[in-house]
Structures are given as structure tokens and as C-alpha cells.
Length: 602
Image 1 (cartoon, helix red, strand yellow):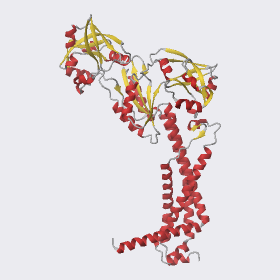
Image 2: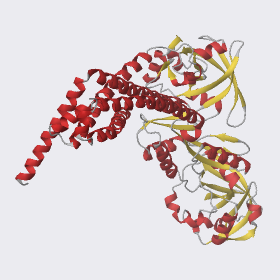
Image 3: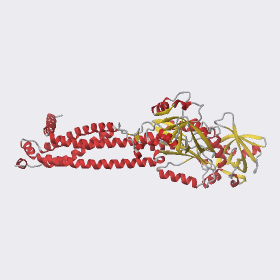
Image 4: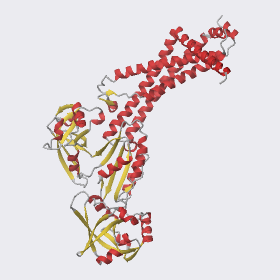
């Protein structure tokens, strides 16, 4: 670097420090003006930080509290429809393993077993949501007891684990008053099992707790295993799985994770590995389900041909087709009845069976298909889904899992398409019902679809808050701009003086901009501190009758969640706005002629 460049940089640095000292001195010299402008900017900063923290607090309650208890951030459900609709995930451990293998930052995966019904207490009734909460009897769940103990109003939370108590129930204080029950009283409820049977249950109130928000009041907790048994779920089954992420700060990431999980849940080929029996003759065979839509029929005809009977009679209820190889081995003819027996996955040494009437014999070049049974999809699904046969190692039968057989061989389930909106989800479920669909379907939804109404309410309140704050800040900003303009106008002679002693026009402009930058920076810091003090005071004051806003409070107190990123961005925005408002008046003042500036106000 040349000596000339070094001298130039040194000179610029010296003038830069000089401008900074002049700007700081001007702020300290004009104390009254500085204080008034600083108070205005600090007040605007305080309002921005306060509002932003309040909205973040609402989002925190919705995303990390309310949705944890209702639908989670992502929910997996499995729908079966055989005469009537029911929600049941048959192999929950497999689903949980798939979730853990494909998603990250998971806080917990909850079994969602809930029953919404009308509960009857002592002479009063009310709508109540029974929620099954798991408990590990061998390894005490201290987190659950800590929650119950901290919120306890009456009763003994440790009775929750007492198996001698008939269906222990924990209710919130408001619901206990609504049902007119105390600890030791009974709450009765009637609901349907997943198989359509009406079930009456009696629950024993073992504890009454205080609700942190109005949203919780209508919920009551009972041991998960007891509620599952009452509703008809086996230990390996559950209603749905709710996925909750750790400290969710960016809710939009849920969509990305849900799409990833949806891709991982692509179904494999559905198959029952069992034994075919006809008049005492037995042979091991695979049983597949055959689909009956137009594409399925076309694909079947491309890979096999009927040599006896008909396709139509084979796909009727209790109907089936048998491959030529298996038919020859067992001497099966069209019209015969065969029995398929198979071992169960979750019940050791137990088997199940179902009967089929042979409606057709087919022949295929695929050896596995040629020795298999193709059952109508209804009978296949109802046995495959409800009884859960033992898994079949499909790697041994990879020739039948290729793409050419996919159109007509039933999958484990139908994976429903992802719903981008709540309206799309509702339409999808309506279309599913209208089509008189039968079978098993898996759906992956996020809080954006399942809890859309809650999120819309949160978005509406956020929008109102933002507009009110921006309006108030705009009014404050007008006052700041006018004050800055008046200040520059009053200092016209000062500008002429410093210009007459050699200060360049650009340096004059820089001094004014530096003044505004320093003023807005220190005022923003003060406003942020004032916002924290205000939030601390307000968060300590309980609201006696919160009404609608009770669901956005914790213990009837406002909940604030200030974030470092939003505070820094607010300060930067305020500094930039202040600089922008001061730049043009300062530029105009710096271009005044020295003589005109010195004559000003003479």
C-alpha cells in the first residue's frame, strides 16, 4: 500500500472520530431536545417489544401447550371402514419406529386416545373430554406427578397408579364444580367402542387440579391402559399418534417434517402368509388382496389369465381366485370353499382363519402368483387389519413386489394425499365417505389442518395487534420527524458557522445522521429495558375474569415470550427509520450556502 493511501485512510479515520465526537457533544449539549426525542423513540420501542412479546407468548401457548394436548404438531391416524368408520393404528410400535427414523428434534410421541362424551356427576352433567395419559408402573413417571402436584387443589395424585381404584380420574377445578363432584365421587359416562358396542363406564375422582388456561378445563385424565381397554384397543393398538417437537420456534418446519414422514409411510405389499385347507388337504400359500378398479383389472389381465370361472364372481364378498399351481396341488375347483389359517403377530401361538369361495382359477408366468390365493379386497383387508397376521419377509418374494403387480395387488393401506389446508382435509374425508370406500387408510396431518380454527384465531389476533402497534408507532414517528426538522432548522446558524471554519458539506450531513443514530440506539435500548419491566409487572398481575382471552393466559396471567432475534430486528428497524427521517433534512441543510446560513434569524 502506498504512503499516499495510508495518509488518506488515516485522515478519513481522524475525521470520522471527529464527527462522532461532535455528534455526541451535540446530543449532550442539547439535553432537553435529546431527552424529548429519546423518550418518544423509547416509547415506540417499548410498544413494539411489548406487542411482539405478547404475540410470541400467544404463539407459544398455542404451538407448545394447547396443540400438545389436542393434536400435537403432527398427527398420524389410521382409518378403517368395514361397515362403519373407526380410527385405530394396529401396529403402533412400527409407526413410532418409522417416526423416530425419519424425523428429528422430537420431544415426545404421544398415544392419542380420547373420548368426547357427556359426563354425569352428582345431579349435573357436562361435555367432557376423557384423555388417556400413560404411566409406567415399574419406572415412576416423575414428570406427571410433578405436574399434578404443582397444580393440585384436592386429592392424592399418587392414587392415579392405584389399580384397586376403578378408573382413576383427574379433573380440573372448573369441571369439578360443573359436575358437582369432589374427590372420591364417581363420574359416569357412556360411549361407543371401536367395534360399535355401547359401553358405560364409571370413573373415580382421585384428584382435582387447577387449570393453567381455559383450554384445559374441559379435559379429564385417566390411565391410558384403562381407557384403551374400555374403548376396545389392544395394547399394541392406539387411536392416533401425536408428534410434539422440542421447543418449536418456527412452526412452518412442521410442514416439511410432515411431508418427509408422509413419504416414509409409503405402504408395502399386503400379504397373509398362511395355510390353505380344503377337505383335509393342506398347503402353505400366500394370500393377496385383489383390487377391482379399472386400472387393476387391466393390470391383472396383462399378468394373468382366467382358466376357469370368472373375474366378477371371484371379487364378490367371500370370493377368491386361486393360482393354477396351488389348484393342481390341492385339487381345487371353481365353486369349492377353502379355509385360510394364519398365525397372529401379537398373540403368540394363536391363529385365526377365514373361509373363501373359489370363483375362478388363473394362470400366471410368475411362480409366486401362480401358487397364491387372490382374495377379494374386502375380506382380505378385514382379516389383514383386524387380526394382524405375522409379518412375511417380502425380500423372499421380490418378483411379486415389482411395479407391474402394484395396480391390482392390495397394499398394506392406502396412503391419503397430504392436505395443504383444513378445507382440503375436510373435502378429502367427505369424498372418502361419499365413495363408500372400504379398507384401510393412513393420513398424516399437521396442526395447520387439524387445529386450523385455533391458528386462524391466533393469526387474527396477531394481525390486529400488529396494525394497532404500527398505527401508534406511526403517530409517534410523525412527532419525531417534526421535532428533527425543527431542530435542524433552529441550528441553521450553527451549520453556517461550522461550514465557515472549513467543515465539508458531507461531514455536516454525517454529523446529523450520527446524532440520530446514537440517539435512536440508546433510546431503543432504554425502551427495550422499559418493555421488560412492564412485561414483568403485568405478568405478575392475575386477571380475575379473563373471558375469551383466558385461553391465551397461564394461571390467568398474561404470557410474554421475548426473543433475541425479534428485539434486535426491532431496534435495527427503529434506527433505520430514524436515520431515514433525518437524512433528507440534514442533506438539505448541509447544502445551504454559508452566507445564507449565517444570516439566518438575524
